[in-house]
Image 1 (cartoon, rainbow, N blue to C red):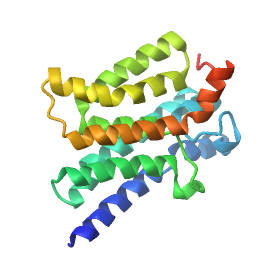
Image 2 (cartoon, rainbow, N blue to C red):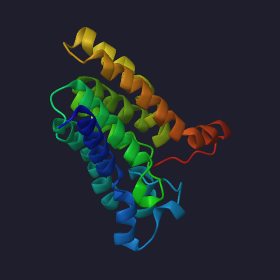
Image 3 (cartoon, rainbow, N blue to C red):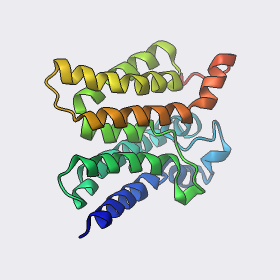
Image 4 (cartoon, rainbow, N blue to C red):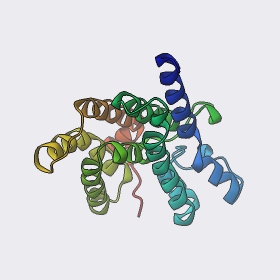
Length: 204
């Protein structure tokens, strides 16, 4: 297989699995609704929790995380062992989740899928971010704040894990974490506006 064919195949398969809209499917199965028309309109686990409850949200969250892990661990191997294919898989699985071809290029905000992808790429750093995410959520009770803080911290967590926890994360993974963090922030721009206005909803 030619290099360009490997790149296209890894990118396309990762995008497709990322684009599977678990929350949209759950909304249709549980209540026959389009979650884009309810709550924040976001196709992610948080909006699923608000509209459908924890029983529906938990499988959605696990599926979204799983998409990232599967893409990086398995789909990247289509290309080979090079870190380049793992990076492509991570980027395109998040892109697919955020802009799904199956739901008119709408989607979630990429937090769950980013967690899965980076757990496969940088497990120490991702675990640190998860602990921080849970801590911020418990203190603020606002998912968007926890997600924004976790995304911003991810590149620093990778650097910290490399320096103090014996991690061997490639510098390109750190660069990708910055790119993905910017994408997460961009997807949360409406949340940041509501935070400034003091109207952002608490999850509990």
